[in-house]
Length: 357
Length: 69
Image 1: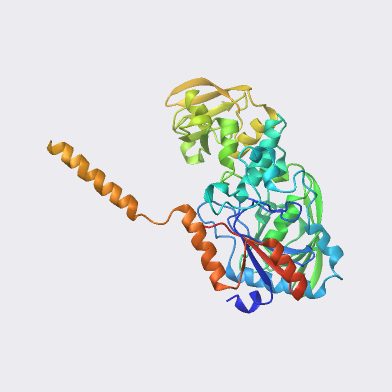
Image 2: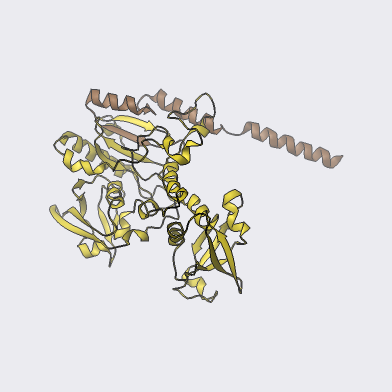
């Protein structure tokens, strides 16, 4: 299905993040499949690869979508370098560390730029998600708040109200009522051609622009509607990013260690709250799992048990997701701080003291 | 004695199963490299070579980041 297009590319498969040039290869490091389309001089034509949940990892990608992205990349390649200015925004700001093995959380494990094919091969590999882990850990180790763009990273277009067809480049299938996209005037069937002047060849390209959008921003978007070009402005209000639930991400494992001592939490559904005597607006995070080993057992050592319901965290008792609760703690509390957490255990209310990491 | 023999038998079955288990993670990585390189269509884990060929041929580059599942 792809061979005729792939034959027009030089195809490279990377299986490790060791030695990866982070000045060039910036993407959602939690992906298990990601692709870049590039010129030989390093100009980025686009990205491919999106994911929004743990179980159905392939929901947001398709061979049809990849085929269309490949074809669109070839078109951009034919127009290069005339389109160089439009492509410039696809490259991110220079990172502090050029390659993953230089990042302080990874240096102690003595990774090199190459895999150890003559020794412990698998153990010598830096996984892509470890780059994101390291980025967050550097903030935590410096006792600085982890910023929103590293927590609520690579938002899907659905966060701003755009549901897109994964079999197309960026075709709107549904606009969520009341969303920024609805207010901007998007309609089902719109084909998103550019965002902030960047040509769009995949859903990942839209995520790239959203990832670099400010806390409050206006994104100029070029769409094709019924064959005609149209410009829409997507207005993002303060805090727009924080609706991005990162609970599904591999890297949330370490955030759970930092914030909740290895507890895995889930927001108690509305239909279960009445039985527990809790309203829909109340904080109610049920403990799904209690970490058992090492630093991930801090919650266990503090006395938390499976099925406890957290009803107050550091005095906060308004409803929030696990992601928002984690964000509150890693942005407002330092490692070594202790927070009081009230839990509902059966009919009993207890206050437990949780050390943060 | 009978219990001891039963435990030893169970241990033997368990060890046999371990030896007959699938490839190690290291072997999976090696197998992946060997199969990709044998097919010849992709450059395996050598970005420098990829960029060099892209510049030489004038073709665009497709870089896929995908670890061994």
